Length: 399
Image 1 (cartoon, one colour):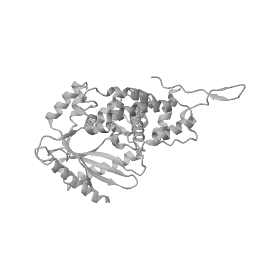
Image 2 (cartoon, rainbow, N blue to C red):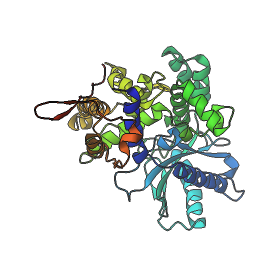
Image 3 (spheres, rainbow, N blue to C red):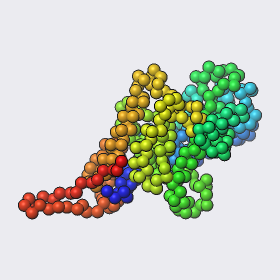
Image 4 (cartoon, rainbow, N blue to C red):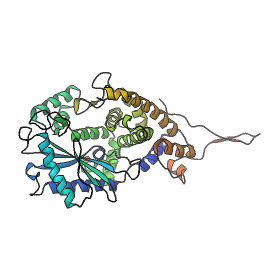
């Protein structure tokens, strides 16, 4: 079938599951407002040069609407205290409490009704207005120079360019976690994270779609990609991650604890992506190649900006075995291949709308759908005896 039709089918589905740009803009305003509050002279954190930034799906531009329309969005943030505070001066608990005081002051100042909630790694603010958010704020400090150097070497050894490895390693942070045995004592052993480094790696994969990004720059009337918010890139890679996540959500809606986690989907999809210019083409390549990105030995799905970290570390553990995490991932991926092929190779708008709802929870407007998808009137063969009209079947994806 015409590849543009396949692309249009998935683009129409994505329109129903993505959040509007205004939601990203609202989220950005909220965490920047929090940053201004933390920088006030009277705040507890201001003397430590606080920097608050988005991480996770909001940072990557891959948010999908919750299946439950009343459920809040998760806005993951990092609060990096960049100067004057180290592992030798503060425990994880002291850092967490320091940030918690300013989070609570912000909650009171903004008249947020629900109390601040302490999670293992973060403080949670619960907005409940026109656009509901869980705003999770992770306290962190810059990782020490020696550890950043080791991370850089590990990335170069795994094939990263030295310039990228160095820039990414320098973004690594140490985070608080009350499950860490050293949470209440001065110690060099903290958990580390690098959400901004990961986001830049993901962006480097998106940049393979050079022609599309040049078009986005012209539309936005800006000269450089870094002047364009990531959510406005709307690259094929981002679109594929969104549709994969929604397909997963539907398939595991009654088995949430066993579903493939988003970071594994995003990482394997980004590795499999090869700069395809439209969503349909990219999705075909990704679903048929992302499984090959799983290593046969540990780390099974390495973090691209911390190669020794395994995003699939729960798979071999007792709990992961009990929940059949690896098996569920592989079964889901095979089902995704079949479902994407079936819907992507059809020109039957009735079948397309039914599958969009069943597999993605997507309500496509049937009125004018044929025109939106670019489907012309079907070629028909008329039997002279029965006068029965037979539509020529669609061709499946090429493998």
